[in-house]
Image 1: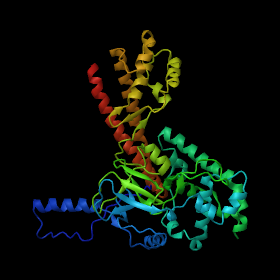
Image 2: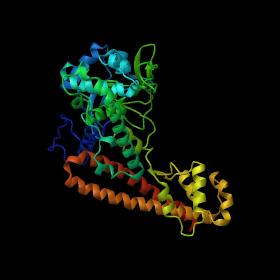
Image 3: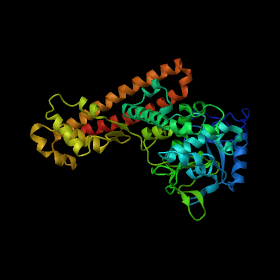
Image 4: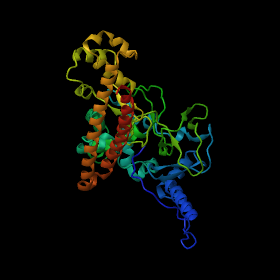
Length: 457
Protein backbone atom coordinates (compact mmCIF):
# COMPACT_ATOMS: atom_id res chain seq x y z
CA UNK A 1 0.00 0.00 0.00
CA UNK A 2 3.04 2.23 0.06
CA UNK A 3 5.85 3.26 -2.25
CA UNK A 4 9.14 2.83 -0.37
CA UNK A 5 12.65 3.15 -1.68
CA UNK A 6 14.25 -0.30 -1.97
CA UNK A 7 17.32 -1.19 -0.02
CA UNK A 8 19.41 -4.27 0.63
CA UNK A 9 20.85 -5.40 3.94
CA UNK A 10 23.05 -8.36 4.77
CA UNK A 11 22.03 -10.67 7.56
CA UNK A 12 24.05 -9.75 10.62
CA UNK A 13 24.91 -13.44 11.15
CA UNK A 14 26.49 -13.79 7.71
CA UNK A 15 30.27 -13.80 8.21
CA UNK A 16 32.47 -14.70 5.26
CA UNK A 17 35.74 -16.48 6.03
CA UNK A 18 37.90 -15.11 3.26
CA UNK A 19 40.87 -17.16 4.38
CA UNK A 20 39.17 -20.49 3.76
CA UNK A 21 36.84 -19.32 1.02
CA UNK A 22 38.87 -18.55 -2.04
CA UNK A 23 37.56 -21.29 -4.32
CA UNK A 24 34.75 -21.38 -6.88
CA UNK A 25 32.39 -23.35 -4.58
CA UNK A 26 32.88 -20.81 -1.82
CA UNK A 27 32.19 -17.91 -4.20
CA UNK A 28 28.93 -19.54 -5.33
CA UNK A 29 27.97 -20.11 -1.69
CA UNK A 30 28.68 -16.45 -0.89
CA UNK A 31 26.55 -15.28 -3.83
CA UNK A 32 23.65 -17.47 -2.65
CA UNK A 33 23.99 -16.15 0.90
CA UNK A 34 24.03 -12.59 -0.38
CA UNK A 35 20.93 -13.06 -2.53
CA UNK A 36 19.12 -14.79 0.35
CA UNK A 37 19.90 -12.08 2.86
CA UNK A 38 19.20 -9.34 0.32
CA UNK A 39 15.62 -10.55 -0.23
CA UNK A 40 14.85 -11.35 3.41
CA UNK A 41 12.86 -8.92 5.50
CA UNK A 42 14.33 -7.16 8.52
CA UNK A 43 12.26 -7.75 11.66
CA UNK A 44 10.69 -4.52 12.98
CA UNK A 45 8.59 -5.94 15.80
CA UNK A 46 11.06 -4.53 18.35
CA UNK A 47 10.33 -0.94 17.29
CA UNK A 48 8.43 1.12 19.89
CA UNK A 49 5.51 1.89 17.56
CA UNK A 50 4.89 -1.81 16.89
CA UNK A 51 5.27 -2.77 20.53
CA UNK A 52 2.56 -0.22 21.36
CA UNK A 53 0.38 -1.37 18.47
CA UNK A 54 0.62 -5.01 19.62
CA UNK A 55 -0.41 -4.00 23.16
CA UNK A 56 -3.31 -2.00 21.77
CA UNK A 57 -4.45 -4.90 19.59
CA UNK A 58 -4.14 -7.33 22.49
CA UNK A 59 -6.43 -5.12 24.56
CA UNK A 60 -8.94 -5.49 21.73
CA UNK A 61 -8.65 -9.30 21.73
CA UNK A 62 -6.21 -9.74 18.84
CA UNK A 63 -2.91 -11.59 19.09
CA UNK A 64 -1.05 -12.81 16.02
CA UNK A 65 1.24 -15.84 16.15
CA UNK A 66 1.67 -16.06 12.38
CA UNK A 67 2.95 -12.69 11.15
CA UNK A 68 5.45 -10.07 12.29
CA UNK A 69 6.15 -6.57 10.93
CA UNK A 70 9.30 -6.33 8.85
CA UNK A 71 11.00 -4.15 6.24
CA UNK A 72 11.61 -5.67 2.81
CA UNK A 73 13.70 -4.59 -0.19
CA UNK A 74 11.43 -3.22 -2.91
CA UNK A 75 8.15 -3.19 -0.99
CA UNK A 76 9.20 -1.50 2.26
CA UNK A 77 7.22 -2.15 5.41
CA UNK A 78 5.11 -5.30 5.34
CA UNK A 79 4.33 -8.51 7.23
CA UNK A 80 6.61 -11.56 7.38
CA UNK A 81 5.56 -15.14 8.05
CA UNK A 82 6.92 -16.74 11.23
CA UNK A 83 6.09 -20.20 9.87
CA UNK A 84 5.33 -21.72 6.48
CA UNK A 85 1.81 -20.93 5.29
CA UNK A 86 -0.27 -23.48 3.40
CA UNK A 87 -3.04 -23.03 0.83
CA UNK A 88 -6.36 -22.36 2.49
CA UNK A 89 -4.79 -21.21 5.76
CA UNK A 90 -6.20 -18.16 7.54
CA UNK A 91 -3.33 -15.72 7.74
CA UNK A 92 -5.10 -13.08 9.80
CA UNK A 93 -8.39 -12.78 11.70
CA UNK A 94 -8.93 -9.26 13.02
CA UNK A 95 -11.77 -8.79 15.54
CA UNK A 96 -14.47 -6.23 14.82
CA UNK A 97 -13.33 -4.32 17.93
CA UNK A 98 -10.10 -3.44 16.08
CA UNK A 99 -11.81 -2.08 12.98
CA UNK A 100 -12.38 1.62 12.41
CA UNK A 101 -15.75 2.05 10.68
CA UNK A 102 -18.51 4.63 10.51
CA UNK A 103 -19.99 2.88 13.57
CA UNK A 104 -16.82 3.86 15.44
CA UNK A 105 -17.26 7.47 14.38
CA UNK A 106 -20.98 7.71 15.19
CA UNK A 107 -20.42 6.23 18.67
CA UNK A 108 -17.72 8.84 19.33
CA UNK A 109 -17.93 12.49 20.40
CA UNK A 110 -18.51 13.32 16.70
CA UNK A 111 -21.79 11.38 16.56
CA UNK A 112 -24.04 14.16 17.87
CA UNK A 113 -22.56 16.68 15.41
CA UNK A 114 -22.96 14.27 12.49
CA UNK A 115 -26.59 13.62 13.46
CA UNK A 116 -27.40 17.36 13.45
CA UNK A 117 -25.69 18.29 10.20
CA UNK A 118 -27.77 18.73 7.05
CA UNK A 119 -27.42 17.46 4.44
CA UNK A 120 -26.05 14.34 6.12
CA UNK A 121 -22.26 13.86 5.77
CA UNK A 122 -21.02 11.02 3.58
CA UNK A 123 -19.50 7.89 5.14
CA UNK A 124 -16.14 8.96 3.68
CA UNK A 125 -16.37 12.40 5.29
CA UNK A 126 -17.23 10.81 8.65
CA UNK A 127 -14.13 8.57 8.52
CA UNK A 128 -11.84 11.39 7.35
CA UNK A 129 -13.13 13.76 10.03
CA UNK A 130 -12.48 11.17 12.73
CA UNK A 131 -8.94 10.53 11.48
CA UNK A 132 -8.04 14.24 11.43
CA UNK A 133 -9.57 14.82 14.85
CA UNK A 134 -7.86 11.81 16.46
CA UNK A 135 -4.52 12.68 14.90
CA UNK A 136 -4.86 16.19 16.30
CA UNK A 137 -5.63 14.74 19.75
CA UNK A 138 -2.17 13.12 19.82
CA UNK A 139 -1.47 11.33 23.13
CA UNK A 140 -5.11 11.78 24.18
CA UNK A 141 -6.39 9.64 21.32
CA UNK A 142 -7.26 6.01 22.11
CA UNK A 143 -6.33 5.31 18.48
CA UNK A 144 -2.82 6.72 18.83
CA UNK A 145 -1.00 3.33 18.51
CA UNK A 146 -2.64 2.83 15.12
CA UNK A 147 -2.19 6.41 13.97
CA UNK A 148 1.53 6.21 14.81
CA UNK A 149 2.16 3.48 12.24
CA UNK A 150 0.22 5.14 9.44
CA UNK A 151 2.29 6.86 6.74
CA UNK A 152 3.04 10.51 7.43
CA UNK A 153 2.79 11.22 3.69
CA UNK A 154 1.43 9.49 0.61
CA UNK A 155 2.41 9.24 -3.05
CA UNK A 156 -1.04 9.18 -4.65
CA UNK A 157 -1.21 11.69 -7.54
CA UNK A 158 -3.17 14.14 -5.34
CA UNK A 159 -0.01 14.45 -3.20
CA UNK A 160 2.48 14.80 -6.06
CA UNK A 161 3.93 18.17 -7.03
CA UNK A 162 2.51 19.58 -10.30
CA UNK A 163 5.86 19.26 -12.12
CA UNK A 164 5.91 15.56 -11.19
CA UNK A 165 2.30 14.99 -12.29
CA UNK A 166 3.23 16.43 -15.68
CA UNK A 167 5.79 13.64 -16.14
CA UNK A 168 3.08 10.95 -16.01
CA UNK A 169 1.77 9.30 -19.20
CA UNK A 170 -1.05 11.39 -20.65
CA UNK A 171 -4.01 9.11 -19.77
CA UNK A 172 -2.80 8.85 -16.17
CA UNK A 173 -1.97 12.55 -16.04
CA UNK A 174 -5.57 13.39 -16.93
CA UNK A 175 -6.87 11.13 -14.14
CA UNK A 176 -4.32 12.57 -11.72
CA UNK A 177 -5.60 16.13 -12.28
CA UNK A 178 -9.17 14.86 -11.92
CA UNK A 179 -8.23 13.27 -8.59
CA UNK A 180 -6.70 16.52 -7.37
CA UNK A 181 -9.83 18.44 -8.36
CA UNK A 182 -12.03 15.84 -6.65
CA UNK A 183 -10.17 16.08 -3.34
CA UNK A 184 -10.11 19.88 -3.51
CA UNK A 185 -13.88 19.91 -4.05
CA UNK A 186 -14.30 17.39 -1.22
CA UNK A 187 -12.46 19.80 1.08
CA UNK A 188 -14.35 22.90 -0.07
CA UNK A 189 -17.76 21.25 0.30
CA UNK A 190 -16.88 19.97 3.80
CA UNK A 191 -15.77 23.26 5.37
CA UNK A 192 -19.24 24.11 6.65
CA UNK A 193 -19.45 20.80 8.49
CA UNK A 194 -15.96 21.31 9.93
CA UNK A 195 -16.99 24.73 11.23
CA UNK A 196 -19.87 23.11 13.14
CA UNK A 197 -17.28 21.15 15.14
CA UNK A 198 -15.64 24.27 16.62
CA UNK A 199 -17.18 23.72 20.12
CA UNK A 200 -15.07 20.54 20.39
CA UNK A 201 -11.76 22.37 20.01
CA UNK A 202 -9.98 25.28 21.66
CA UNK A 203 -7.95 26.05 18.51
CA UNK A 204 -9.39 27.63 15.36
CA UNK A 205 -11.07 24.90 13.34
CA UNK A 206 -9.29 26.01 10.14
CA UNK A 207 -5.91 25.13 11.65
CA UNK A 208 -7.05 21.59 12.48
CA UNK A 209 -9.14 20.69 9.43
CA UNK A 210 -6.81 22.11 6.80
CA UNK A 211 -6.62 20.92 3.21
CA UNK A 212 -3.38 19.04 3.92
CA UNK A 213 -4.93 17.31 6.95
CA UNK A 214 -8.02 16.23 5.02
CA UNK A 215 -5.90 15.12 2.05
CA UNK A 216 -3.86 12.90 4.40
CA UNK A 217 -7.07 11.38 5.83
CA UNK A 218 -8.56 10.90 2.35
CA UNK A 219 -5.42 9.07 1.21
CA UNK A 220 -5.43 6.95 4.37
CA UNK A 221 -8.96 5.72 3.66
CA UNK A 222 -8.47 5.45 -0.09
CA UNK A 223 -5.23 3.46 0.06
CA UNK A 224 -5.67 1.36 3.21
CA UNK A 225 -9.36 0.59 3.78
CA UNK A 226 -10.75 -2.90 3.26
CA UNK A 227 -14.16 -3.57 1.74
CA UNK A 228 -16.79 -4.11 4.40
CA UNK A 229 -20.38 -3.23 3.58
CA UNK A 230 -22.26 -1.54 6.39
CA UNK A 231 -26.06 -1.08 6.71
CA UNK A 232 -27.34 2.43 5.86
CA UNK A 233 -27.44 4.93 8.73
CA UNK A 234 -29.96 7.77 8.85
CA UNK A 235 -27.37 10.31 9.97
CA UNK A 236 -25.17 9.62 6.93
CA UNK A 237 -25.79 10.24 3.23
CA UNK A 238 -27.09 7.28 1.17
CA UNK A 239 -23.70 6.72 -0.51
CA UNK A 240 -22.40 3.13 -0.09
CA UNK A 241 -20.75 2.65 3.30
CA UNK A 242 -18.12 0.06 2.43
CA UNK A 243 -14.82 1.20 3.95
CA UNK A 244 -13.21 -0.08 7.14
CA UNK A 245 -9.70 0.64 8.36
CA UNK A 246 -8.03 -2.53 9.63
CA UNK A 247 -5.00 -1.89 11.87
CA UNK A 248 -2.08 -4.29 11.36
CA UNK A 249 -3.87 -6.11 8.55
CA UNK A 250 -3.29 -3.04 6.36
CA UNK A 251 0.47 -3.64 6.55
CA UNK A 252 0.04 -6.46 4.01
CA UNK A 253 1.45 -5.41 0.64
CA UNK A 254 0.16 -6.19 -2.85
CA UNK A 255 1.41 -8.80 -5.28
CA UNK A 256 -0.36 -9.69 -8.54
CA UNK A 257 0.97 -13.24 -8.19
CA UNK A 258 -1.01 -14.33 -5.13
CA UNK A 259 -4.63 -15.20 -4.49
CA UNK A 260 -6.53 -14.60 -1.28
CA UNK A 261 -10.08 -14.61 0.02
CA UNK A 262 -10.91 -11.66 2.24
CA UNK A 263 -14.21 -10.84 3.95
CA UNK A 264 -15.87 -10.07 7.24
CA UNK A 265 -16.99 -13.29 8.94
CA UNK A 266 -20.42 -12.69 10.46
CA UNK A 267 -20.09 -15.72 12.72
CA UNK A 268 -16.70 -14.95 14.25
CA UNK A 269 -17.21 -11.16 13.94
CA UNK A 270 -13.70 -10.91 12.49
CA UNK A 271 -12.28 -9.64 9.22
CA UNK A 272 -10.45 -12.66 7.83
CA UNK A 273 -7.95 -13.24 5.07
CA UNK A 274 -7.37 -16.76 3.80
CA UNK A 275 -4.51 -17.45 1.41
CA UNK A 276 -4.78 -19.59 -1.70
CA UNK A 277 -1.02 -19.41 -2.23
CA UNK A 278 1.75 -21.05 -0.22
CA UNK A 279 4.31 -18.87 1.52
CA UNK A 280 7.64 -19.97 2.98
CA UNK A 281 8.90 -19.26 6.48
CA UNK A 282 10.38 -15.78 6.96
CA UNK A 283 9.02 -14.61 3.59
CA UNK A 284 6.87 -11.56 2.97
CA UNK A 285 3.16 -12.37 3.01
CA UNK A 286 1.23 -10.66 0.24
CA UNK A 287 -2.39 -10.11 -0.63
CA UNK A 288 -3.77 -9.09 -4.02
CA UNK A 289 -5.70 -5.85 -4.35
CA UNK A 290 -7.04 -7.03 -7.70
CA UNK A 291 -5.83 -7.51 -11.30
CA UNK A 292 -4.84 -3.84 -11.62
CA UNK A 293 -2.47 -2.27 -14.10
CA UNK A 294 0.18 0.15 -12.85
CA UNK A 295 -1.86 3.25 -13.72
CA UNK A 296 -4.63 2.16 -11.40
CA UNK A 297 -2.20 1.06 -8.67
CA UNK A 298 -0.50 4.45 -8.73
CA UNK A 299 -3.76 6.37 -8.92
CA UNK A 300 -5.50 4.51 -6.08
CA UNK A 301 -2.63 3.30 -3.90
CA UNK A 302 0.40 5.42 -4.77
CA UNK A 303 2.81 2.69 -5.91
CA UNK A 304 3.92 0.77 -8.98
CA UNK A 305 4.27 -3.02 -9.19
CA UNK A 306 7.47 -4.13 -10.94
CA UNK A 307 6.99 -6.88 -13.57
CA UNK A 308 3.22 -6.54 -13.14
CA UNK A 309 1.59 -8.94 -15.64
CA UNK A 310 -1.42 -6.60 -15.84
CA UNK A 311 0.69 -3.54 -16.69
CA UNK A 312 0.16 -1.93 -20.07
CA UNK A 313 0.62 1.27 -22.08
CA UNK A 314 -2.55 3.07 -23.10
CA UNK A 315 -3.08 4.53 -26.59
CA UNK A 316 -5.34 7.59 -26.76
CA UNK A 317 -7.52 8.55 -29.71
CA UNK A 318 -5.25 11.39 -30.83
CA UNK A 319 -2.21 9.12 -30.94
CA UNK A 320 -4.27 6.42 -32.65
CA UNK A 321 -4.97 8.61 -35.69
CA UNK A 322 -1.66 10.53 -35.70
CA UNK A 323 0.28 7.80 -37.50
CA UNK A 324 -2.38 6.60 -39.95
CA UNK A 325 -1.49 6.76 -43.67
CA UNK A 326 -2.12 10.19 -45.18
CA UNK A 327 -4.34 8.47 -47.75
CA UNK A 328 -6.76 7.20 -45.10
CA UNK A 329 -10.35 8.12 -45.97
CA UNK A 330 -13.65 8.57 -44.10
CA UNK A 331 -11.76 9.08 -40.85
CA UNK A 332 -14.55 10.83 -38.96
CA UNK A 333 -16.99 8.07 -39.82
CA UNK A 334 -14.51 5.37 -38.77
CA UNK A 335 -13.84 7.10 -35.45
CA UNK A 336 -17.59 7.42 -34.92
CA UNK A 337 -18.02 3.67 -35.48
CA UNK A 338 -15.24 2.87 -32.98
CA UNK A 339 -16.88 5.15 -30.42
CA UNK A 340 -20.34 3.66 -30.99
CA UNK A 341 -18.95 0.11 -30.72
CA UNK A 342 -16.92 0.95 -27.60
CA UNK A 343 -13.60 0.40 -29.37
CA UNK A 344 -11.95 3.75 -28.66
CA UNK A 345 -10.97 3.11 -25.02
CA UNK A 346 -8.65 0.56 -23.41
CA UNK A 347 -6.43 0.24 -26.46
CA UNK A 348 -3.08 -0.95 -25.13
CA UNK A 349 0.38 -2.38 -25.62
CA UNK A 350 1.20 -5.21 -23.22
CA UNK A 351 4.00 -7.65 -22.48
CA UNK A 352 2.79 -9.88 -25.36
CA UNK A 353 2.45 -7.04 -27.86
CA UNK A 354 -0.44 -4.86 -29.01
CA UNK A 355 -3.80 -5.87 -27.61
CA UNK A 356 -6.46 -7.40 -29.84
CA UNK A 357 -8.59 -4.29 -29.27
CA UNK A 358 -5.78 -1.99 -30.46
CA UNK A 359 -5.05 -4.02 -33.58
CA UNK A 360 -8.77 -4.31 -34.36
CA UNK A 361 -9.25 -0.56 -34.05
CA UNK A 362 -6.26 0.05 -36.34
CA UNK A 363 -7.53 -2.48 -38.89
CA UNK A 364 -10.83 -0.63 -39.09
CA UNK A 365 -9.10 2.74 -39.40
CA UNK A 366 -6.83 1.37 -42.17
CA UNK A 367 -9.65 -0.01 -44.31
CA UNK A 368 -9.46 1.11 -47.94
CA UNK A 369 -12.51 2.88 -49.40
CA UNK A 370 -13.66 -0.28 -51.20
CA UNK A 371 -13.19 -2.34 -48.01
CA UNK A 372 -15.14 -0.05 -45.72
CA UNK A 373 -18.38 -2.01 -46.13
CA UNK A 374 -16.63 -4.86 -44.26
CA UNK A 375 -16.13 -2.91 -41.02
CA UNK A 376 -18.44 -5.22 -39.05
CA UNK A 377 -16.32 -8.22 -40.06
CA UNK A 378 -13.23 -6.42 -38.72
CA UNK A 379 -14.83 -6.03 -35.31
CA UNK A 380 -15.68 -9.74 -35.36
CA UNK A 381 -11.98 -10.56 -35.89
CA UNK A 382 -12.10 -11.52 -39.57
CA UNK A 383 -9.15 -10.83 -41.90
CA UNK A 384 -10.15 -8.48 -44.74
CA UNK A 385 -6.93 -8.42 -46.78
CA UNK A 386 -3.18 -8.84 -46.46
CA UNK A 387 -2.77 -5.15 -47.23
CA UNK A 388 -5.05 -4.19 -44.35
CA UNK A 389 -3.20 -6.53 -41.98
CA UNK A 390 0.22 -5.17 -43.01
CA UNK A 391 -0.84 -1.52 -42.86
CA UNK A 392 -2.34 -1.86 -39.39
CA UNK A 393 0.81 -3.60 -38.09
CA UNK A 394 2.98 -0.87 -39.59
CA UNK A 395 0.92 1.83 -37.86
CA UNK A 396 1.07 -0.07 -34.58
CA UNK A 397 4.86 -0.25 -34.87
CA UNK A 398 5.07 3.50 -35.55
CA UNK A 399 2.92 4.25 -32.49
CA UNK A 400 5.05 1.91 -30.40
CA UNK A 401 8.27 3.61 -31.59
CA UNK A 402 6.79 7.02 -30.79
CA UNK A 403 6.05 5.89 -27.22
CA UNK A 404 9.54 4.44 -26.84
CA UNK A 405 11.14 7.73 -27.90
CA UNK A 406 8.81 9.73 -25.66
CA UNK A 407 9.50 7.47 -22.67
CA UNK A 408 13.26 7.74 -23.16
CA UNK A 409 12.92 11.55 -23.25
CA UNK A 410 10.88 11.59 -20.02
CA UNK A 411 13.36 9.29 -18.27
CA UNK A 412 16.22 11.63 -19.23
CA UNK A 413 14.24 14.55 -17.82
CA UNK A 414 13.51 12.64 -14.60
CA UNK A 415 17.22 11.87 -14.23
CA UNK A 416 18.12 15.57 -14.54
CA UNK A 417 15.40 16.56 -12.08
CA UNK A 418 16.62 14.02 -9.52
CA UNK A 419 19.96 15.85 -9.53
CA UNK A 420 18.35 19.28 -9.27
CA UNK A 421 15.25 18.65 -7.10
CA UNK A 422 16.47 16.50 -4.22
CA UNK A 423 13.29 17.14 -2.18
CA UNK A 424 11.28 15.46 -4.94
CA UNK A 425 13.47 12.35 -5.00
CA UNK A 426 10.79 9.90 -3.81
CA UNK A 427 8.15 11.28 -6.17
CA UNK A 428 10.53 11.27 -9.12
CA UNK A 429 11.65 7.72 -8.33
CA UNK A 430 8.00 6.65 -8.46
CA UNK A 431 7.57 8.16 -11.93
CA UNK A 432 10.90 6.69 -13.01
CA UNK A 433 9.77 3.21 -11.94
CA UNK A 434 6.48 3.57 -13.83
CA UNK A 435 8.15 4.85 -17.00
CA UNK A 436 10.88 2.20 -16.86
CA UNK A 437 8.26 -0.54 -16.61
CA UNK A 438 6.39 0.97 -19.57
CA UNK A 439 9.62 1.12 -21.58
CA UNK A 440 10.13 -2.62 -21.02
CA UNK A 441 6.55 -3.28 -22.18
CA UNK A 442 6.99 -1.15 -25.30
CA UNK A 443 10.26 -2.83 -26.20
CA UNK A 444 8.61 -6.23 -25.82
CA UNK A 445 5.69 -5.04 -27.98
CA UNK A 446 8.04 -3.72 -30.67
CA UNK A 447 9.73 -7.12 -30.81
CA UNK A 448 6.37 -8.90 -31.05
CA UNK A 449 5.26 -6.56 -33.84
CA UNK A 450 8.46 -7.16 -35.79
CA UNK A 451 7.77 -10.89 -35.64
CA UNK A 452 4.20 -10.35 -36.88
CA UNK A 453 5.38 -8.07 -39.69
CA UNK A 454 7.76 -10.70 -41.08
CA UNK A 455 4.75 -12.66 -42.33
CA UNK A 456 4.02 -9.84 -44.80
CA UNK A 457 7.56 -9.15 -46.09
